[in-house]
Length: 138
Image (cartoon, rainbow, N blue to C red):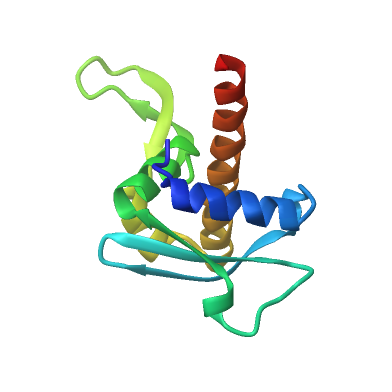
């Protein structure tokens, strides 16, 4: 679960409304991963911005980013391993690398793009589902 501030929630809702609830129109204009923060700049595909200052800036901690990569199984694949002492083979998920290191060192450009899109999808899904859950409580 991604921590979303109320200010960011408001801006994300504004963006959702401005794309007429067509989430496929929301794209990552640019991104930056430095230190402890992944920064994504979001924009409407039908209304490209001239500068990043005009885009919606979303900052996600690398810890949350790593959780998303792991939850989506992006840094692993299904394979078989042999038990070290009992000598039987079993199916398991085999991790390629730690999530953020996988993103930086092992993922192709396409996989990196899919990962960023997965973050946006998870962010929007969480926002909408939490809003619906909050309305049911009232």
